[in-house]
Amino acid sequence: MKILLINPPVREWAKPNCFPLGLGYIAAVLEQEGHEIEVMDINAFRWTQDEVEDKIKNAEFDVVGIGGIVTVYRYVKWLISIIKRYHPQKRVIVGGSVATSVPKTLLERTAADIAVIGEGEETAKELFQALENNEDDLSGVNGIWLKDKKGRIHITSPRPIIKNLDTLPLPAWDLFPMDIYLKNPVGAPNRNKWVDGNQVDDTLSINLFATRGCPYKCVYCYHDFMGQGYRTRSPQNMFGEMEMLYQRYGVKYFHFVDDEFVMNKKFVYEFCEAVRGVNLGFTWGCSGRVNLMTENLIATMANSGCVLIGYGIESGSQKMLDIMRKKVTVEQAKQAVKLTQRYLGWADCSFMIGIPGETKETIQETIDFCKELNLVPEVIFFATPYPGTELYEIAKARNKIGDEEEYISRLGEQGEQIMVNLTDFTDEELVQLQGWMIQELDAWNKIKHPESR
Image 1 (cartoon, rainbow, N blue to C red):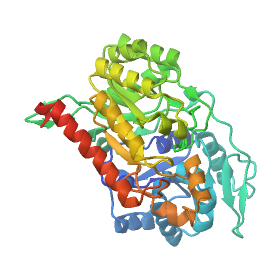
Image 2 (image 1 turned 135 degrees about the horizontal axis):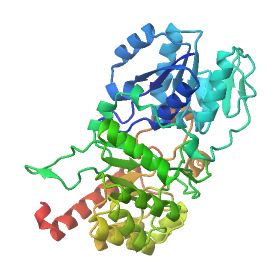
Image 3 (image 1 turned 30 degrees about the vertical axis):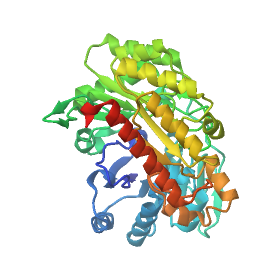
Image 4 (image 1 turned 180 degrees about the vertical axis):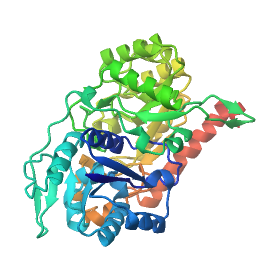
């Protein structure tokens, strides 16, 4: 079959720097199955809607697949309408968290035909084989929601998670505009490189994953479409990908986007040994979790080229951490940040405000936490209820959501605005409190580090 895969635009205020791993893997799997794949990467090229419509009008394909996160729902709905306008008989399949987190809304409110739920690689194999064979009955394809000709929705059995991640082919990079993604830095490839007073990022970088799943259940977190089962690739498989990206494209910084990169310490140590054993000058970054970090682990990571460990600290208040069900303590957070600062020179930390129970006292505790550690947060988010999270269910129970489609159509990126206020503050007060935190910590930093002015 001739399959058109579309990557919708995301975070349009920033340059496109995150390679669409989900579509990359799907494309690779489908190529292995003998299909002809064409990619329309709207996010990379940032075409206007008129340009996109013209490309879709003239496109030739048998089936179209769209991937994306839930914040691109409004664009995906428009995209589907354009596809159906010019190709009314062609099936439209949607995957990613935009399908997994709101499949009912997606199928009821758009002209999409099929929603792929969970990991898509194995589902794609079976689904496109069935479509190629013109099978009318897709009930045997696990992991999908679909609409019949009368508009009725049918749900097939859940798809088991992929236990051995090494069985997956590497992403089909050659089908995407790699020059665009590689030239826009992701993570911290050259954080300490400065030219004429400006920070310079000229090391080619790319995002990739080493693990899938997360055993923790923080109330605000949606674990994308990888399921709860925690799995790792083998260090040899990971390093082979890094070496290939280095040889083919010159990539030297690798940013792991896993929910829990450090969950399996044996895996991390083996990976560090593999990277350190081949002196190619790689650097890399990942997320950490404060209750899992030890001095030996951080030192080993730093010694193997790790230049960034990101922490979602979220709050310096134990009360708020407990409400979030982070399963960490403030003291663990302090220790992890101090060790990371010692071995890496900095710690990439983010915070959020607005979880139910937030008070001026808990916000002050977060400010005090940052001052004690000489820490300037990379960002302070507003807590946002995303579909599929416990926080979303709390917001629904409080009648804060209303119409789901209207709500997800307004969703911004990573808590940049107040979508639902679950505190006792007014929206204006919450915005002022965020501004107060930023100003207080900026002023503190200038006092402690006058050279940064």
